[in-house]
Length: 262
Image (cartoon, rainbow, N blue to C red; front, side, top):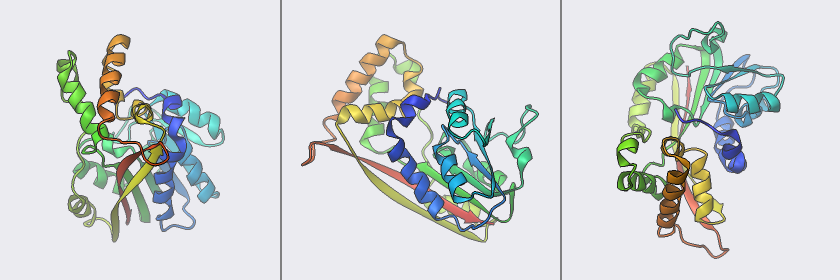
């Protein structure tokens, strides 16, 4: 997993939180008692859950200490746990799974980093109460220029051997996710949304990537290599993201949503 930087991630907080709001809007619950925000990051999505369900007990789970530190400052009355969403059991005395069963498992922009969804999703379903909901949102943008060009720059530079094979996995198709969940859930709603984010220029696209998609690559480079990588990447972006009438560029960002009720 990348080394997350909450400050960098939150440079685009409004844009990153919008899919979280859209996911939560489709959760068909009125009064859940136990809610877990999986991959809670700096707490922006957790705050949405606390506001939507003020009587629920909400916990946040993340692997990144920097993200958890910011989340605890943001929401001091919420319990945030360092933990691996995918781990079936953890050595910690306070594993997040021990706080279940859950009425809502809310996983916004986290499961795309984890392997073997065919095993992972049913394992999460097991933690739900009857009538509980698994709500998932995952970026589905690996075929977009913003990500294709990362792979292109990684493969072409002197760092190619170090950066080989570190791209996150491609998501399964919609029908595969549907089939993974329907044997366990009485209702599965699944859809794509393509967001069009107006950003100042291609440098802003690179800044966005430094908070997420570029992290696995930049983390293996020294400072001088990072500068060269970003310069090449930003130059290539300009050929694909053209200035619009207002002087901005549009970053297309497809995302996959799943809301499944047990």
